[in-house]
Length: 239
Image 1 (cartoon, rainbow, N blue to C red):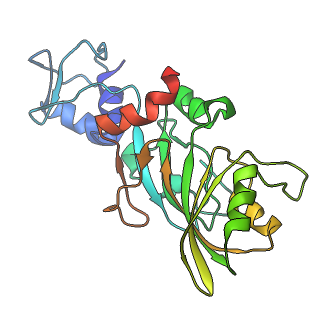
Image 2: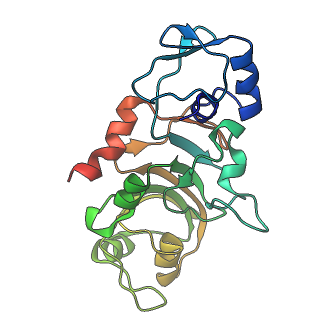
């Protein structure tokens, strides 16, 4: 791999920026200064240093986004802003995609990665990866609704959902609830409540598998996952 491409892929800057770094003598490979932007390296074997810091090879990128309402969970859209539009330039053109979808008006945890195998496994029905949501719902929620979720609900197209968990947090004119599902059908939670004559007023995903949203992450912000968090989301790959 060319050294300029490697540095750009590892987030050291755009191709033009890393070319300037290389020509300025700020990049070394195996302790030797390299000024040729097309110099070939072996990622994972050669030791690359830029600005005095080692640039470790990363095959995959994992991001946690606290998705805001108003953007779509897609890599491109001709009319709407996408979650990729929220990312810094250094993360673009690396094959990053959102793992699953959150509705345009739904907030919360969204994992973005360029690890296609991981994305497939987290969404595979046989893996039964739980997704945890907080919702505000119109009207009262009681034991009848909780039992309906436990058994699975027939949606408007005749599909019966898998058993799900429904927990009431607080109830007044509106009810605040926690919902845990193992599927990801189109508008599933909204359609489940709709089948019971209720309307979802607000929806936020709190967790996917064992990975929970970072409470310090503001709406619209994102960060890379820690090694411990990567281990949490890779667990389904091992089962």
